[in-house]
Image (cartoon, rainbow, N blue to C red; front, side):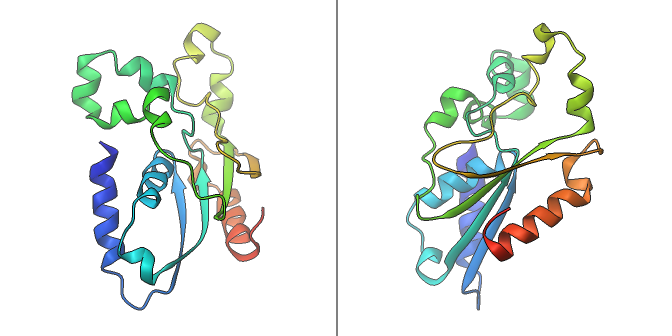
Length: 170
């Protein structure tokens, strides 16, 4: 489940020394882990100021792909208990960020997503790419059309992240 990832990240953050401020860049389900982590009181929050958060293609409203996969016992064995946390029902249980936080979302279309547009709708609805990324009151959203198969391999995401972390906007 997401909780085991939260515990690991919490332990790491509690052991940081000489760190006064921190920003996070998450990809995919990492955004859900961070949202849940920030909901809990933690020792590290008393000594480290949270600056900014960037989410890259977060499954903000859950994923119908994981909802469909969670119906199969072989998928639950393969992916583990986190599969339930990634469904639309599971994501509803995860609290939103504090409204005072500076959060930006990068919504990215990759070459793979563009190729999948040619698939019939009956297949597309099962793919994890066709999901809504925006959640809560987050207004700072940018879209990237990448020519790569994997969004993190192109230069666009890095330059957008650096700009947001420096200026607080895309």
